[in-house]
Length: 63
Image (cartoon, rainbow, N blue to C red; front, side, top):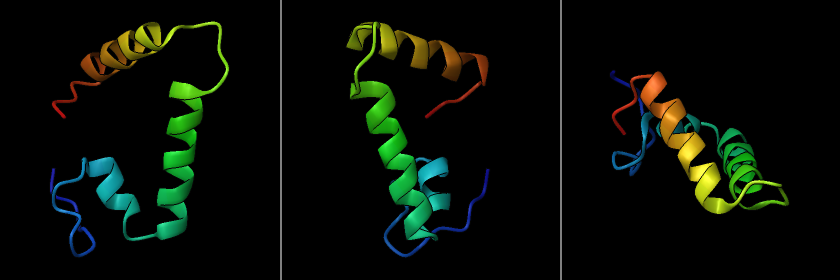
C-alpha cells in the first residue's frame, strides 16, 4: 500500500508513517503502544506479543 510519508519516514511501518505527518497523532499512537505492551496488565509480555502476532496474521499484515 502506498502511503504519503514525512521526510525521513521511509523505514517506518505504514501505520506509523501515516502518523508521522501529524506529530501529535504519532505521539498518541506511540503512547498507546507503550501502554498496551508495557503497562500494567494480567498478561505477560510474551502473551501480549503473541496476541499482536495473531492480530497481525488475521489482518494479513506483513510488517
